[in-house]
Image (cartoon, rainbow, N blue to C red; front, side, top):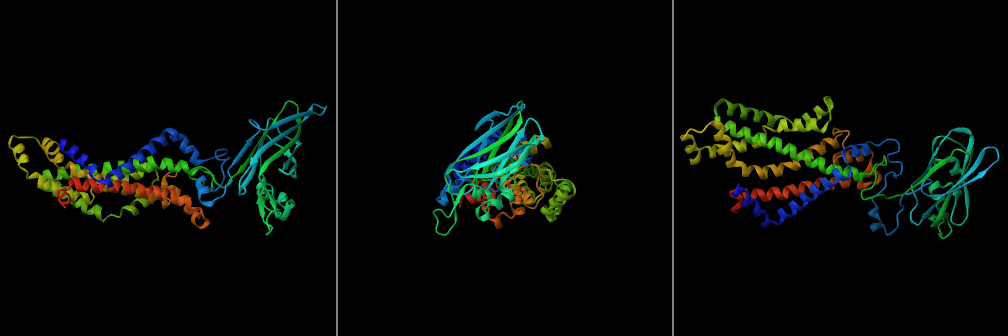
Amino acid sequence: MNTLLRNLRELRRYPSAILGLTIIGLLIVLSIYAVIAIPYSEAIRLWRGGPGVWDELPRNASPAWFDLFTGKSLSRTIVVDSRTEGTRTREPLGDGNVRERLILALDFRYDTFPTEMSLFSTATYETKRSKLTATWVKPDGTRVALASGRSIRSSDTYYISLDNQLRDRLPQMAAPEVALFGEFGASSPKGEWKTQPGTYELVLEADMPEAYTLESKLVVYGSVYGIAGTDNQRRDITVALLWGAPLALLFGLLAALGANTATFVLAGIGTWFGGFMDSAFQRLTQLTLLLPLLPILIMVGQLYGRSIWLILAVVILLNVFSGAYLTYRAMFLQAKEAPYIEAARAYGARHRRMIFRYLLPRIVPVLLPTFVLVVPQFVFLEASLAVLGLGDPILPTWGKLIYDARAADALYKGYYYWVLEPAILLMVTGFGFALVGFALDRIFNPRLRTM
């Protein structure tokens, strides 16, 4: 143990190892933060989505830090909810009804237009006789009728951007989110639309029974959002990037620990007993080396299930008798002839003691660099399965992000961030473990240490 600790202290001599340990440490901190900030059940709920989960998020929005490269103030999402903002007035009509008037005001100061507009309304009653009227007021006082005579329902969504009748009434038949927030040709010689900064108002009027109320929420979707942006289902990509870290590390570490530990122990047992057991283990190793791992995992995913835990179990099983078995066997054959092993045999030590007390500890230091180096292999294997559409359909992983981006033609449509963010994290993970693994190999491998 003292020798192992002394060798590990030598990592300080290798700048590459320090960099690798820093990367791994940051990934561990990111994983801990993800688990604490977004509990597992909440992460699954957010990623699977559903009614109301992502209503306030824009679709296909770039990360907010894109501002740094454009030189413009890109539009952000603005939410105005009558429950917490806005002005409400009620005018009695004399027949038990009132005319309720809601004014939702918002301040728009961006250089680019919104991407969408939606109005979400809820009422404590539902009637086809009461009608809702919506009017848009621009900073210069221009009034635009959005909806007139819309029946009030207990729950209703008015997609302003998809209102073709409104589009037909707007200047130049422009998209509603452009015409309502811009001015045409006012300061542009080419006659283009330009954003009009200022305070806008959405005025809602409805006649309803005095005992009931109407609540509305206006959502003006921006073109950028958050640290990582959003996908085509309005999901915050940050959720998958954060939770992809603990899932990738957990899969890689468990697969490496399970497969390498089993290979190491079985190689020691087979070498010690020799004969039929050693021969059988070698034949199993040769057979496993002939089996194509990825096609087998694809077959398992298609026929049995795509749970990440099922895939993990199959990966460990198929890597027990890997090529590392032959490497460990060669080391154990040499260690088996060591003088201290002969001395232990002389005083009658049992097989279990000989294997687990004297033989295996002799080669344990060699296991550490091999273990570190194979972790990214398993991380990339899980990501590869997810990219092929065979990843766990529930969990938000880096590979699943790339698969969703490919399915939505993200690169073709210019959503490069959707692909690059998880790909960079995968490469950084592999880079960090590789730096530490190569340094450990130089420390524990005498032939490399003398070079």
